[in-house]
Image (cartoon, rainbow over all chains, first blue to last red; front, side):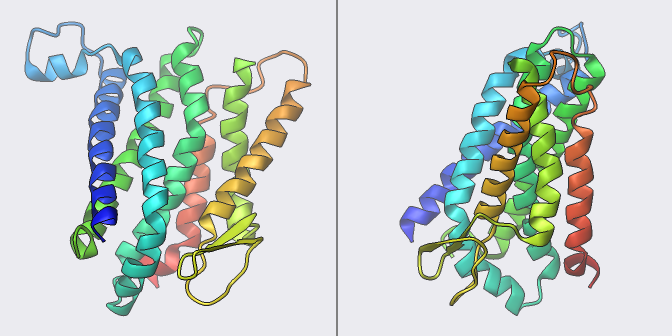
Length: 154
Length: 102
């Protein structure tokens, strides 16, 4: 019980770090800013997006692997409760999350290639990064909601 | 060889949709019994096909990537590779529609 709660907590910490990194990169590639000193928003937009790539890949994989270890526990202890109380939308959202994360993990090789390849266009980098960002945000929010329904220490 | 990385990502996304729809899971995990079975198997308790679906898609994508390695060295995929996972996600939402609209 304590073991799974600790694992869930570590999973959440990885997810928060990943969320910050991918959001930074997505914003800086979509709305780049050269004048970092202008304001907080400009500084947020003006980061060197390239430097985030490897960290995002490692964080994504660590978060996904931890999530897949915890997943059976969700299946046995949480999902039946969601079903029992007719929480179909959170249940379906979690189903979508698992598939989105699998597709996101498989997208990482292309993501790395497009960020490391100088010939790749900005539009390509923007597309692949925004898709990863949407997947990470969806996974985080759904995980958060499920955790609120029946998660940490329940 | 780096040019093959987007091929793997694209192939995985394309293969994932039929593997999920037809449940061609390579393995099934039975969390209640803590057992692994080969192929899609339903026993006592809820079966977990997701690991098997990912494994099948991974193997399929590796095969497609290996085949692509033997093709002439030219631009195999455009920068629109990321649209394929988007299409698969839309298909997954369609499969899961009873949860949201049922």
